[in-house]
Amino acid sequence: MHNSRPILRSAALRDLERRQGDAQPPLMERAGAAASELVLRLLAGSANPPLIVAGPGNNGGDALVVARLLRLQGLQPVVVFAGAAEKLPADARAALAAWLACGGTLQTDIPQQSYALVIDGLFGIGLGERRLEGQFAALVGRINELGCPVLALDVPSGLDSETGRALGAAVRATHTATFIALKPGLLTLDGPDHCGIVSVHDLGLNLDSTDGRTVGPTLFAQHLCARPHNSHKGSYGSAGILGGAPGMAGAALLAGRAALKLGAGRVYIGMLKPSAGSGVSEHVAVDPAQPELMLRAADEVFALATCLAVGPGLGQSAAALALLRRAIAAHLPLLLDADALNLLAAHPVLAGNVARRSAPTLLTPHPAEAARLLACNLDAVQGDRVAAAQDLARRFNAPTVLKGCGSIVALPDGRWFINTSGNPGLASAGTGDVLSGIAIALLAQGWPAESALLAAVHLHGAAADACVADGIGPVGLSAGELIAPARKLFNAWIGSPSPAHA
Image 1: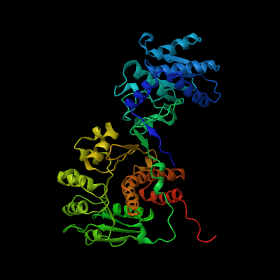
Image 2: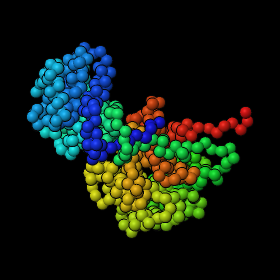
Image 3: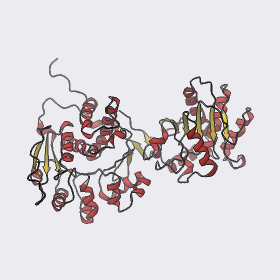
């Protein structure tokens, strides 16, 4: 299990740094010391020297502190300085002077030789949305071609620390030592492919506020309670899943299986009837692999369920639209996924009705669905995933997960979270249906909407990680294979009640 950790964006980091301006030792010295300790562990006695590439700002200053401290340990780092000494910020200029004073020298380009490790100190959070060009792009290309481990200081150069976008040329690090707190760009979109193993070095600072947090069980621990002996199926709710149009029954069945095995007392799947002339005589009557599921005509589920998930295999027919209208009007906890979201995007009046619901609502869009809901293009959503998720949560007054690499969970009050569990095995058809099933199971068991979504997202990713740890995937991991490990993990998180008899 991953603990929840703070995430700060650039404005909050800069504000914190300003308030620590007179700190002793200075933050740059602290950052360099923390990074140099990690460097010594990574070098592990290698005979080849480390290469340090220092840029024209404070990130370069951090790198120069690392160089000096390594030299004082008896190492001979090769230092490439890509900047002008007279234009450095004051602290970085002092770090350069200290490096030269201890006998260090500077190179203007990377010498041709073997290196044990490259320390990337070109650009940190100050780069923003600028693309690296010219000398800096060339240096990044050389770093990526050296074929040795790379440690990025704070953020891999060329990666937007706010959004996780790789801005053209970007360092591909094997390790990233980030300072004070995590940054969103390390955890989402392109970030995980460029950061490698991320370590956080708080530099001795106590964070008095955070922008966001990673998702971890501490956020929903109060609901991880062992079941009492005196309980029955009615104690754990009735999950209703509406979808399964002809040709897409598998999506609803996957969601239903996940809901059943994650603890819903009963699971009803409301299958859409085949349309006239479709060539399909009747809807699926039973799931042979999971006969405990109760398959009904879709309109029968409303009177049976205590919460609803609408969307897995729903389609966008007139019958699907009618079901969605009825579900939105029902005073039940509601999860909207897949084609339910596409229908919302196409019918703005319905979208307004969702925002006005008094019962809890959850949204689980992937980026293309989010773009339709926000009436923008996919690049705009992926260009700032945190902002897109926040916009959806606010517009629809609903906790929302924007799925993808580093899924973003946003709440209507502006809070946001990034999930760090999961792996590329989730890039497979049906995994979103399993996520919906996990979330609706928790809603059925009486979990609050916010906690249900956070727990479902984290558990879904953790199940994929457990599969890979057992040699299942990531390539070829199928959605149905997530359900059993999700159940095992969830039971481990909850623990067991004490025996009835000693």
